[in-house]
Length: 375
Image 1 (tube, one colour):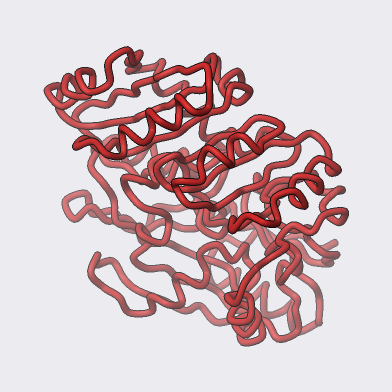
Image 2 (cartoon, helix red, strand yellow):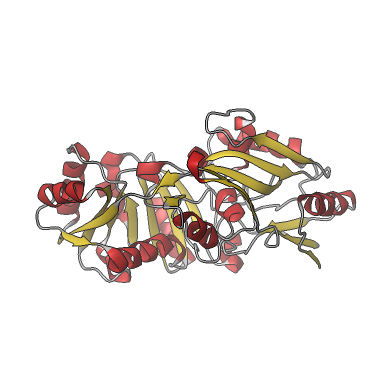
């Protein structure tokens, strides 16, 4: 297999064009931290890595915008922003090693999506390299710039099946004055969900609101069904949270950081993970259906269910067919993905995705199979 690590956008575009011109299947990636995520990569003869495209291209702290190359590690970007008390609150799994291009290409986001939005809400522009050897710019460095917005949204979450992301422009958020995480523990699912409902009805709305099953809580050093509310703001606001959440344990500093670092990694920890999108009112039913650890974004309607064996995954999928939940096997061992139908009900959007694939990659050469075996 030919392995390439281009250092410029032009080199990346040339590498793609040359391989495609020879009809070679291409495996495109960054640090490859998400090889267990999404579909199996079908056989390729050329492997292109973006990790050497790792520069900060433009940073305007006063404008809360930054432009970076796709191979820059998310952890390095976070450190650079923290020096100016700014952040890009995506909270992806594999955060230490993952490249920002991989985070965006996989559509990864975490607990603070509730308060700050997902990747597509933070990307204001990007450039990408095509199989024809072109480097194309979409959007810009202005937050209200909407030029090329549809192309940006198409590439986010496409797992590199359409083109190679070269650089990304983001709108940033200021770090809050201080943060607290309030942990409420319960002995039953019903009690935990009732507490979640009370928070949602309240005046104070935390940036993150996660609910862990008892087995998931064990993995992060907690006990029982745990509701985690993460808030940021002034000390007076934190005091108000403590008043509104009586009985909660308040975490701050290194304890808080350690907890959320572990929570962020949860989706990648079990051997198999099903991501379920569901109505907020279905949270209890999802938690009660879980046979293993379960982490729910309790204010967003997304849950992650962990399993040890492929057979357990198939049985759960079959048992929940009557529910109107969107289900996808998001993480699985590479050598066992072929045993599973990872995306059993893609819905009408798949037809549009297939048309985009034909437009960008008519010969099906780039990251074939990575979009959950569908593209």
